[in-house]
Amino acid sequence: MKVVAFKRELQGTGASRRLRNSGQTPGIIYGGTEPAVNIALDHNALFHALKKEAFHSSILDMEIDGSVQKVLLRDFQMHAFKQLVLHADFQRVDANKPLHVKVALHFENAEVSPAVKLHSATISHVANEIEISCLPADLPEFIAVDLSKMDVGQSVHASELKLPKGVTLVTHGSDATIATSSVPAGAVSAEAAKE
Image (cartoon, rainbow, N blue to C red; front, top):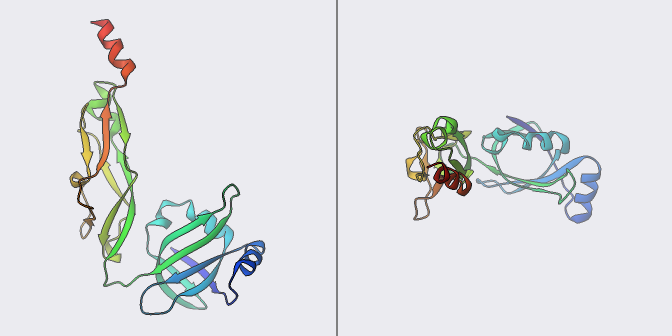
């Protein structure tokens, strides 16, 4: 994905407000061996790009004044109630250094799992993203979680995920729960009443 940005010289609250009023969003690029660079991005293009999941977990080609740098979206701030991006942070990416980044989880095959099909259970997604470490070239857009073998009372843990080649899980001492299945209380009493 390509992003076009412009260097900005003026800093501060007033300068940022004027930038936003002119349809641009202030941002910053940091990391690597070069100093941090203040940038301005087209607000509408950035706003629509942020709606795409791939934009959050892909290496982006950031073009500034004709030169292209590889960057990763690290953070962004939205207005409390307006559809307005207030600020965006990007980190430079070195192709030879591993990244620590959070990637979205996609839950698949829940409807064919024994928990749902046989017992009308509810599968709860405990986590929607997971922290991984990999080289920029191996960065996945998302990680699939297969729920097809899940039964009532079982849960899926981070250690059970099938990770793409070159990707390792960043655990903080515990095997995090990703999804759980349980039969709703009303369904249990209905089954008991039938018996």
